[in-house]
Image (cartoon, rainbow, N blue to C red; front, top):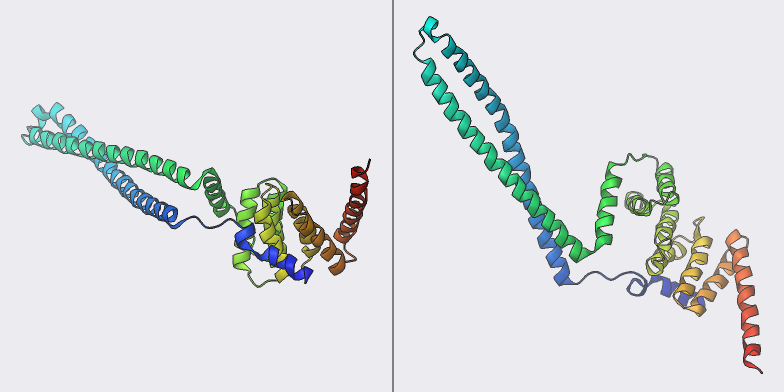
Length: 281
């Protein structure tokens, strides 16, 4: 029964995993996202139009240059059309320059508007969401191995190097790509460790709970119990912290984590025996 209570505690996303944002906030974020996508599309179109116009300006400049050269030799060539050609080329050039100025103005306006959109999204989602988005972009640019073990090792390497957000992205991607693989338990543990390193115990507990409930045979299962005990302790849940240690010793008696758990249980017992003596005078 006590084991079931512990597993239930680890499984409660409402208690240990951050709740979804309210519908109103999500609606605002979605709307801003749609507006941003539309402006990005317009910005792309304006840049493409500008890129298509610039070569035409070069052509017109060449025509004007040629016409001017023609005027220098007009007396010899007796070309009456050169003046008309020059005037038309100059008018076309002026029109193209006007288009360029329009595109540049539009691009500036769109870039400014996109900057304001980013500020609004930061205000709604918080700086952490922006960091996660940047980590996601960084992860997309990172070359990943196709082998699952190498992929997991890469995530662990990034976590060890302190690049927690990037590691979190990689662990999450691993869980989606190899959802039924035996290594999933280790990926959940690694993901929990990224939260634990930031003292986000509720999120970490959710991931450790995934390991001990769904992947008890994973190599990281004993450590998941040990970390769960530490998280419970930080959350001032002493009974649950002790229970996690007891379940670790019972379920994985020969593991290195169990040895640590026994030492901590001994310390708790010692502290419990000493506590009443402190109250006596």
